[in-house]
Amino acid sequence: MLNKSQFIKMKQEKDKIAMITSYDYPSAKIAEQAKVDMILVGDSLGMTVLGYDSTIPVTIADMIHHGKAVKRGAPDTFTVVDMPFMSYHVSTQDSLHNAKKLFQETGAQALKLEGSGEVIQTMEKLVHAGIPVVGHIGLTPQSVHVLGGYRVQGKDKATAARLLQEAKEIEAAGAIAIVLECIPRQLAEVISRELFIPAIGIGAGAECDGQVLVYHDILKYGVDRLPKFVKPYMDSNHVLGEAVQSYVNDVKSKEFPEVKHTFTMDPDSLPDL
Ligand code: KIV
Ligand code: NA
Image (cartoon, rainbow, N blue to C red):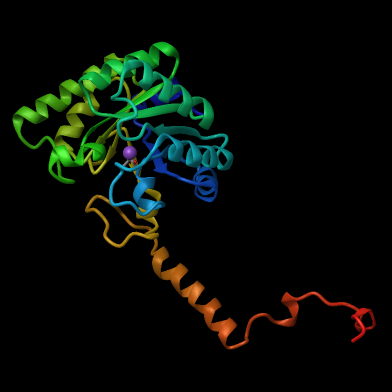
């Protein structure tokens, strides 16, 4: 399994970090077999696998449930687990308690926290307690209602400067990496260059030190609309839909099961009627 210093070495050698989300055992196995450098158990699971329309309803219990399944499928891949909505904005004591529970019970290698300001102080406390943390700035979906929608962040001089400052503060707090979501590629390039730790982009262009995308997005699996920054690699909705339809058709038309799908016995052993 890779570690913090290897991720920093990858950045220095311009060796890109490939990260993907995963929410369960089969997706984690596929990610590990594909040799991704990092897995993210994203709270995007609220949408991708639980069917909510944002990440806001996701709980610590949800993250533990899915995080444990992912670690069973990818025991040898560095795995980051998201702290869900409001679980790190409560008192310091409760935030630390939530982080401890999530970190211990999932067996994650790091926790990811969205935002800046007071969140950075919480990050410092987690690092101090021995929990590696990853930052996440730009479009932070847990704050969608404060941001006024899922839109690009940091296009004007003031917010661009603020995002660079936040990135530096997150690095200073001891984060091992930072996710930059939905910011202009020119700003992502500057932030990546100014940081020592890797900047992992999603909708942030090619100059980041790594990329992260949502598993269900790249496979078009259960999602209908894809954001501009996603490159789909297959259409699972179509492929899986056709397969399940064929199964249903075979049952209805009695083409399934065939003898080869069945068990047999000596007819003499049948019950007497
Ligand atoms: O939850 C998630 O999938 C994320 C990524 C989009 C970075 O946080
Ligand atoms: Na997330």
